[in-house]
Length: 101
Image 1: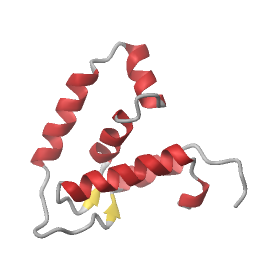
Image 2: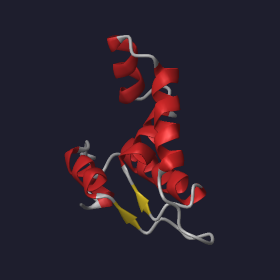
Image 3: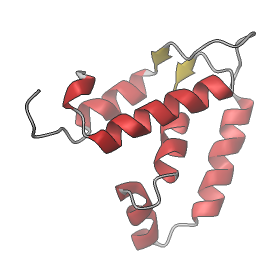
Image 4: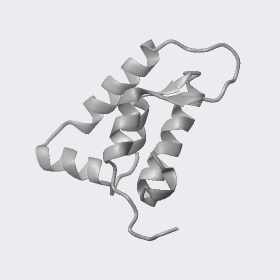
């Protein structure tokens, strides 16, 4: 995965997911961290999808938060150093920027 080829919105979501993992003391960024970051993008594709399908956003946020609360934590303030296999796969399918760098 080349982060330079991802769109700015995807890059932002990944950074927010890593920040969420670090804040919670998790060693790796997982799908739940990414979902939390995507839910915070009110005008993003994820929010639009939830709205179009009539999904309960509050319920989803709460369920994800509970799952993250149950996840194991690492002692001391460490930065999330890796991404889970699921997040890596999701990034592979993420939209890429058409601008060459």
